[in-house]
Length: 302
Image 1 (tube, helix red, strand yellow):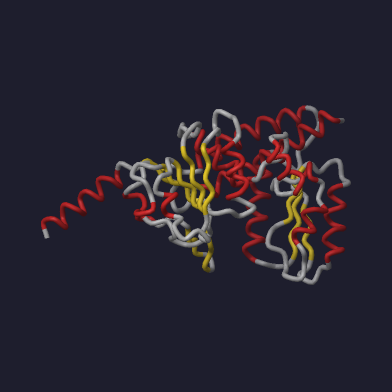
Image 2 (cartoon, one colour; image 1 turned 135 degrees about the horizontal axis):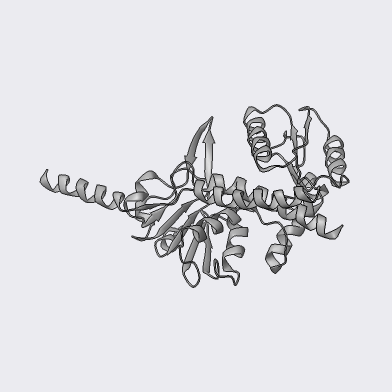
């Protein structure tokens, strides 16, 4: 019993010394910069604009659109919106995209994911003007990322790099392991953090659940980024003591958030993103950073 009490005390002591890395302050810093840049454009009689398209009546998707519209208003953005019915055709969706592509007053465009099952989201993405793609997921923009060319960056990977930089987490030369190889997070993040830049320049390993001994890789990581979308897959025994742990992968069960990183990992990590309010706020902030950059680029071209 005494040993158990000592063990519990030791665990609480380790947990209390673990540094939390909330995304809110990072997002606030990015959005303050976006607001200042938007004000400069407004002084030139240009209002930055982020357009959104929603297909169907999914409550969660509609909620995400409202969040983005409120944020747009706070930043001084216009936020035109098209709501298509759930039975909209692929041609209807492409027509809505084309209208925003052709509108010089629209600088950024987002098609809310997911779309109804009969629609091809990838085809819709490819129909988008890549310079207005604020998600950074158009094939051309993924190619730009791979080649180190300027362009909108995928929002969650860019948000994770910004989070590590904000909290002065050394990345250059360190071993980063990403558990997950998805197109929206794991793969682009690996490219981003391996590029030669003060906030990147890491030795990056991408591993996934198809590798039977994936824990052998995560246990040696200086920085471990969970991007598998498997609730609770990262447990304390998968983490090197003192490592930085970033939870990027999540699933939802109704409105309940189920992160990849189990809460008990806080007992061994040196720094960790919180279960709620970690990477999410930075993802939204990067959306608007991409949009303001697109607006500035359009003004410069004109």
